[in-house]
Amino acid sequence: MKGILKIILYPLLMPAVLLIVSLSTQSCTDADGKQASDALSKKVSVNNEGQIITFPKDSPGLNELKVSTAGKGSATLSVIAPARIVASISYSKNSVSPIVLFDSPDVTSLYSQYIQSKANFELTSKNLIRTKQMFDNLGVTGKDLNQAETDAATAKASLAEMEGRLKLLGFNPVEMESIKGDMVWLMADVPEAQLSEISKGGSARITLASFPNKIFTGRIDAIGSIIDPNTREIKVRISLANPEGKFLPGMFAQADFGNKIREAYILPLTAVVTVEGNDYIFIQTASNIFERRKVVMASSDASQLVILNGLNENEKVVTSGAILLKGISFGY
Image 1 (cartoon, rainbow, N blue to C red):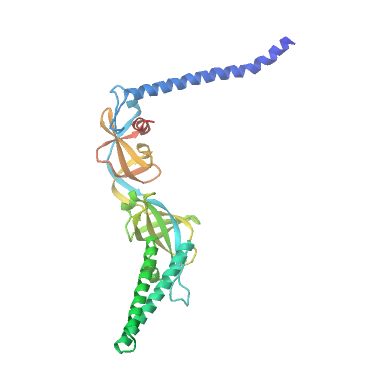
Image 2 (cartoon, rainbow, N blue to C red):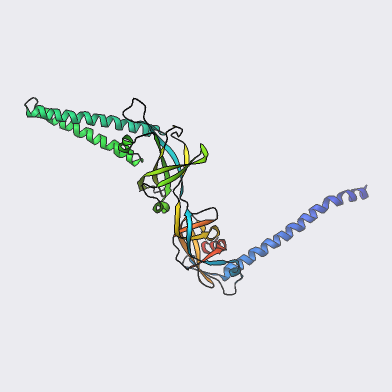
């Protein structure tokens, strides 16, 4: 029985022995790699809070870095922002004023208050004119005139408040009333750094989740005056014709404000690293010295980036190996 047991157990033990040998070998390899990385970082000098990195001139780390000279080229700049249809404006056959539908009950209520305030202001204004005429003809007392003036002033203040609150949300009620034809309004959230690429009156290419294979062209009607302190984004309002009524409030969309630019610094994706929401590149200032530089960029296509600010012509940019410099510069 003992001989039989030995024959049975032997093949069962072999994989375990091989696994132990494999793990031991892997452990040695990992340890060697970590030691090599530690040795490299010890030899590298980091100054000015990680902005300046100096390698020994014979450092093997230099062989992992590829550098290209920055030059200007042409690219199609993509400034893509999430958007949503926030209102639809239409006219029925018998309506004089537009029918406005919002995607938010709160905005709907606010717009209703605006309509009421406007009607009250028009009523009190007419009453004030009539009361003044009657006062001039001794038909009413001074007290009646004062009351009419107070009512008109109060109505005007209420109307201004409602209009101001709507404008803060990106809606201009006066513009809504002047629209001819059926359309929708979209609201896009554009990053502060890309705002310079957008101008009022320009066009935007719109794709809607409900119509994924189609591209529509909208018009930039307004750019907000307040930047969100948390997201660093600004509201941009876009109008889009809706003659068939197929676009509905609440639909999600994307707005592309991109355009063709002739003079731009274009870099591959591998040249840029991101830390805590900020984008950086590394400039070679000497054969073994690199400077970390914060940049403002925009997407061009799936493989390229357009640098809007932070790079000068003929500077040498690390286009391969930036991830190594990121670890050294930021300490991880």
